[in-house]
Amino acid sequence: TKPNRSYTVRPGKKFIINWRNFTSKTLIIELWQGRYLKTRITRSTPNSKSYEWHVARNLQGDGFQIKIKSPTKAGEFAFSENFKILNQ
Image (cartoon, rainbow, N blue to C red; front, side, top):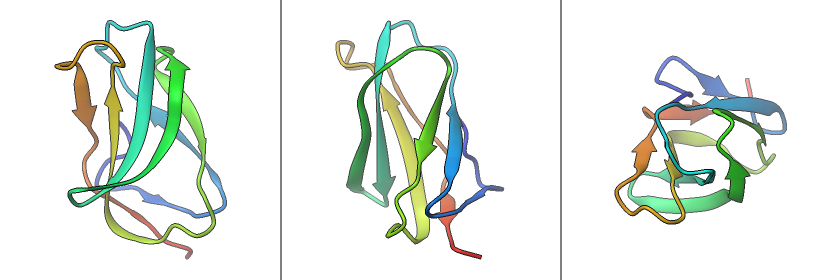
């Protein structure tokens, strides 16, 4: 799952989230910071192995992760590595 540790995502910009190895036809994508759900990026997107995320301008910090999960299969989920959202 991308982004990974080497990525710094920019607020107010587009970022492509990538994944693989999901069998569900649709997926949910969430943004987590530490142990807390920060926002749901999308409630339902086709399992196309990528999603264009428009990063909100008010997001900044570190310790973020993307969680991708199936809406119907509880055990089908993955977290990205931690990454930063910084306006540099």
